Image (cartoon, rainbow, N blue to C red; front, top):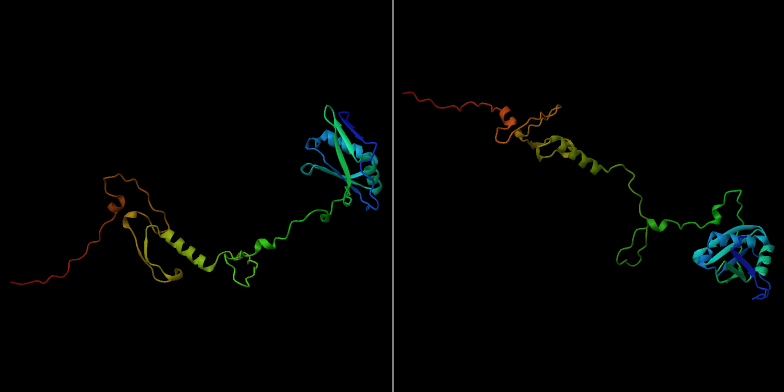
Length: 238
């Protein structure tokens, strides 16, 4: 036990022993100041209570100002309760503090050589409420919550696939303006294409050319109008 901490008990018991108390393997050390939850003082307290029997669990809880102590044997609990209530803790150069020791509810013995069963720990609540449909602002009479359907397992809906196909066709056409779109990609379509765009609709890529402002467009220079025949004219003989 570290010499910087002194632990002692009163010669006169502050409380009479409870008659007919249920046997337990746990003790509760209360009124523990927050400053006592230091490794030095906690080690001194554990060594003190280990004198009365082998300790199975030593659980300091600073937020509740208490320590839960679980022995392997119930006789160790009775002996520690009888000889340690009240308990005087006096750190070096500090005012002594009186702690109280009470019997606690029995706790299961944890075997450290084997994995701990999940039954000894709290489990999260079921997630059923997370999947319920939220109620409306003013629920009608007899309205009951129902479980929400799971997400759509299909990759894409049929209408979404058709819309994506149409978008893909429009991207391939480049500068074409769609006047009439064929239904579901099948049928006759009417498009308007800009001849000055210089883009190619074939498998090859469009030829990119440098163009300076104020000069004719390269695409316009390559384009030659097709000559048309004159309309028939009546010939008058004189």
